[in-house]
Structure formats: structure tokens, C-alpha cells
Length: 138
Image (cartoon, rainbow, N blue to C red; front, side):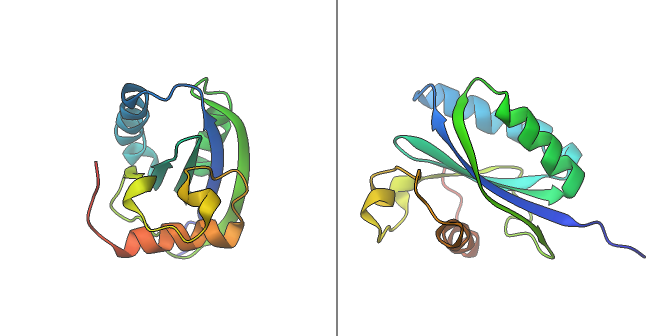
């Protein structure tokens, strides 16, 4: 049996609307739409930027990322990681939300909630750490 290739995309984007309601809308639409497409992930909302991980079947992730690029809630979108993976980090999360200030940051820029200059390695390490801590933060 051929297994479906899983894809992981991590991107950053600037907030257009900093309200909690906007963030809730993003999470609610993700939780409503992602399960049928077999997409899971995690969204970190920083002060300036979002850092988001999407994972699932390659075609579904590509389709969602294309949709996000035209979403008015995001601007200056930049893909940080685009890779084929064997396992998901967030198997049971249609979209997990982690406020950046709940996390321990070593890097000063990241600790200020600005992910603009994050490296692929830093991004993967952050999401790996979050996935290992199974407590949900909403």
C-alpha cells in the first residue's frame, strides 16, 4: 500500500488586525475546515507576526497555503520551511494556538514576538518543543 506523502509548511506573516477576535476567527475557521482536508498544525501569535505550521497531505497543504496567501488577515507572507515528512508533530490538532509569551525564548527578537528573521531550524525546534508539551493553551 502506498502511503500518502505528508508535507510540512512553516510560514510567517504580519498581522493586519491585532484583535483577539481576529485570532479567534482564524482558529475557528481552521478547526472547522482543516479536519476534512486532514490538515493539522499550530499557530503562534506574536506581537508583530504569526508563525504557523501546517501539515498534512501534500496537495491539501499546498492548496491551503495558496489560500492563505490571498487571505486579507495576513500580509508579507514568507515561507520558512517546505518539506516532506514521515510523521506529524501535531497529530490531533486541527489548529493549536500558542501565545508566544507562554513559551520560553532565548533569542531576544523572538521573545519580543517578532518572527521575521527566524531560521528554518529555529522554527522547527519551536514547533517540536510545543508538540512535546501536550498542554493546550487557548
